Every structure is written in C-alpha cells, then in structure tokens.
Length: 118
Ligand code: HEC
Ligand code: HEC
Ligand code: HEC
Ligand code: HEC
Image (cartoon, rainbow, N blue to C red):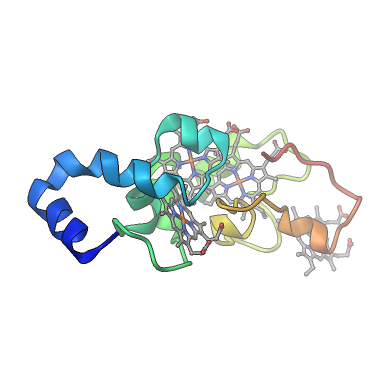
C-alpha cells in the first residue's frame, strides 16, 4: 500500500477495512478454518498492516479461551497437547498460521504420539 492508501484507510475508517483485508489476504494465506471464519489480520496481530512476526497467545485466547479451556477441549487426545510437562507454550509454537502447523512435542517424541492437527 502507498502512503496515500494509508491515509484513505484512516479517513474511511471501518468502511475501508474490507478492501484492505481483501488486498492483504492475497499475500498471506491462512488455514482454511480461519479463512472461512473471516478472521482478520488485526484479530491476531493487533495491527492493521502487520509487520511483526510474533502473535501473542492472548490474541488466540480472545476467541478460543485460555489454557484450561483448551485443555478441556482436547481432553480425549492422548497425551493432551494442551496439558503437558512443557507447560503453557505459545499457541503459535504449534498452530503456525501462514505455514503448516507443527506439533512441537514430536521434536522429541517422534513417531510416538498421533495427533489430529490441521
Ligand atoms: C477473531 C477470532 C479468532 C482468533 C483471533 C483466532 N481464532 Fe482460531 N478460530 C476461530 C474460528 C471462528 C474458528 C472456526 C470455528 C471453530 O472451529 O472454532 C477457528 C478455528 C481454529 C482452529 C481449528 C479448530 C478445529 O476445530 O479444528 C484452531 C486450531 C485455531 N482456530 C487456533 C487459533 C490460534 C492458535 C489462534 C491465534 C494465533 C487463533 N485461532 C486465533 C476464531 C479465531
Ligand atoms: C504443543 C503444541 C500445541 C500448542 C502449544 C497448542 N496447541 Fe492447540 N492443538 C494441538 C494439537 C496437537 C491439537 C489436536 C489435538 C487432537 O489430536 O485432537 C490441537 C487442537 C486445538 C484446537 C482444536 C480442538 C478441537 O479438536 O476442536 C484448538 C481450538 C486449539 N488447539 C487451540 C489452541 C490455543 C488457543 C492454544 C494456545 C492457548 C493452543 N492450541 C496451543 C497442539 C498445540
Ligand atoms: C489467526 C491468526 C493470524 C491471522 C488472522 C493473521 N496472521 Fe499473520 N502471523 C500469524 C502468526 C502466528 C505468525 C508467525 C508465523 C506463522 O505462524 O506463520 C504471523 C506472521 C506474519 C508476518 C511476519 C512473518 C512472515 O510470514 O513474513 C506477517 C507480515 C503477517 N503475519 C501478515 C499477516 C496479514 C497481512 C494478515 C491478514 C491477511 C495476517 N497476517 C493474518 C498469525 C496470524
Ligand atoms: C525437549 C524435548 C521434549 C519435548 C519438546 C516434549 N517432550 Fe515429553 N518428554 C520428554 C522427555 C525427556 C520425557 C521423559 C522420558 C520419556 O518418557 O520419554 C518426556 C515424557 C513425556 C511423557 C510421559 C512419558 C510417556 O512417554 O508417556 C508424556 C506423556 C509427554 N512427554 C508428552 C509430551 C507432550 C504432549 C509434548 C508436547 C506438548 C511433549 N511431551 C514435548 C521430552 C520432551
């Protein structure tokens, strides 16, 4: 976006959020569950035009709930990825967004556990 575009966005406020998002999403793909749900760049990055790599777990928790909630959600997974000896890892250690997800546990436990992560 050019400088002029940025000013237009500021002037139009909410109205220009849609075109700005459409333009950005061409450049950054999201997992289909987030693309379909229309999760916006700002929801995770807390910036209209993200420049930072780090996304705080707080952003994810706003919609999904905290660790105890995630632990309950996957209580049937063995072992529970949200309740391990690693403690409360950043969500994005596993749920990466513009690249395929990884299960960090498997770095050490390769081939030992099976998860249903997408
Ligand atoms: C603005 C709200 C919002 C934010 C922020 C958000 N999500 Fe989501 N997420 C959703 C919605 C809506 C869905 C699709 C419905 C569902 O499965 O809950 C979803 C789906 C998911 C799923 C798939 C769930 C399934 O059943 O397969 C995962 C995993 C996930 N989000 C993780 C994250 C992580 C990690 C973050 C932070 C980087 C995050 N989300 C940020 C709203 C959000
Ligand atoms: C160590 C890796 C890891 C971390 C860190 C992690 N998750 Fe997960 N998450 C997983 C795996 C693996 C699954 C799939 C579990 C299964 O096999 O059912 C999952 C499943 C989910 C789901 C979908 C649950 C369902 O089946 O409906 C959501 C939503 C989710 N995680 C959100 C989060 C959020 C929010 C955080 C941070 C608070 C987080 N996760 C942190 C590995 C992780
Ligand atoms: C569901 C949360 C989420 C949403 C929505 C999201 N991002 Fe990200 N973004 C991340 C995470 C997590 C990372 C760290 C790298 C990764 O996991 O892919 C990241 C990294 C980035 C980076 C820096 C690293 C890189 O890949 O170059 C940029 C730039 C970026 N996102 C732009 C965007 C734009 C533009 C949008 C809107 C189209 C967007 N993001 C939407 C979570 C999100
Ligand atoms: C840095 C390496 C490392 C990572 C990453 C890691 N673990 Fe472990 N884990 C170990 C070691 C070492 C032990 C103890 C020796 C053993 O039993 O393999 C262990 C033991 C365990 C055990 C008990 C023993 C067993 O085999 O049943 C479970 C369950 C477990 N880890 C789950 C997880 C989960 C879930 C994750 C991801 C959230 C994870 N680990 C990530 C190294 C790691």
